[in-house]
Image 1 (cartoon, helix red, strand yellow):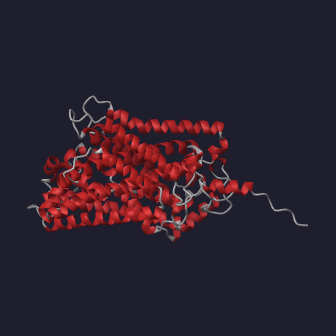
Image 2: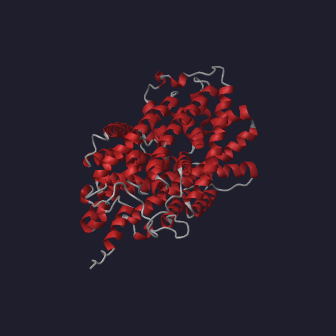
Image 3: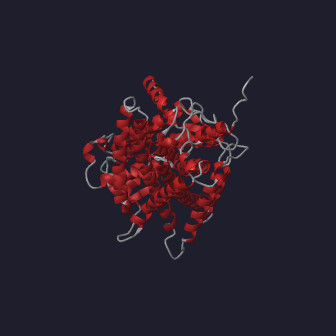
Length: 536
């Protein structure tokens, strides 16, 4: 949150960051802080999102109903850890620590390439180039995975209610097209679509939570799931890996800074609210599941019913009609998450094109809507190619008809989550370096300490994620998947670092601009403007 002390410290650090020469010899604007340049085509449209619009866009990416219906039962069933509610609260603390430094950076850097922009400001342009490639791959993987599950669920709904049989990839490709259209339109229109879907989704989950607490299992309103003793055994670390994926999305707020009114205040406010809401909401909902089945029954029930657990519990308490609506909203919730990730990837591509990390065509916006049209088109093509590739791999009827789509969902989701984890850890380190190099270490001491703790915790979770990747993706013993899939993120990082290193040698001026965003173009504009003629 914006406080008097934080504003004062921001002002003091701005005296270092906003004048003279920035990190790595980069020039900085004359005034403290960074204003958004309203340049034709090279800038996103400012002032499109307020606090509510940004918050809804960010929370939609977390997919509340998808987490409650999919992630939670899977974690209970696969890992057998009853203390999942406590894990959500613990992760909320870790991500709040991360947010203290990350949100403070959002007051100094307004760039649609959030993660890589922050990392480049702290660790240099080459590191920023590596981060940009990881972000592009990670968020694309998350979105592609959701297309698979969404197509599978829509196919099931059509078969059940309309008695129409279609392959999963058909509704998936239809969704790709619909998202492409929305991604081309104004971001405030997207925010309204996401907001409506999110609010209905959250309302239905809250209704289930209340129903579960009003009609508990014979074990009653047990708080056993919050007992620290439940967090023992080998499955706890892997459960953390499952649960951290449920938070993915809250970190997207700075991506929209250029399109937000009063970004110095709104972005930080939204991030903290999102982390707090997600942690409490998921902790209460996962606890409600244990109340409905009983703490001793949650693991067996989850292993037996898997993703059908929530729907079975609602049918017995709230009836078939409510459960049918829940099934439909499960699909629309995934659609909201897909659209949110699409918007993020499009903006990363835009920022990368604007700064020379991708061809310049990606750094231009749609003149009618101000949306990053070329970046949106890139993400549409990538998603369509991935869906078609997995559809071709579907060897029905001889093989398992669910294998390709479930692989797409689990592989994409876990590859993406690993990438975001590593980006958060790198951003935490970059925050520390950013303020230390600017002589603001004393003013920002507690944020630096919080970022350090967050970096350690996030790296530990990332380490367990890689170690237990075979469990996360359900790989068979001896399979190459546990190292091939994380290797995708590693390959993206290496490719980005090499690209950045080459730019440093061959295009030093472009390399010096990485992470500066609109600020670089303000400087270009100032350099191109001839000085006023001397007066006699």
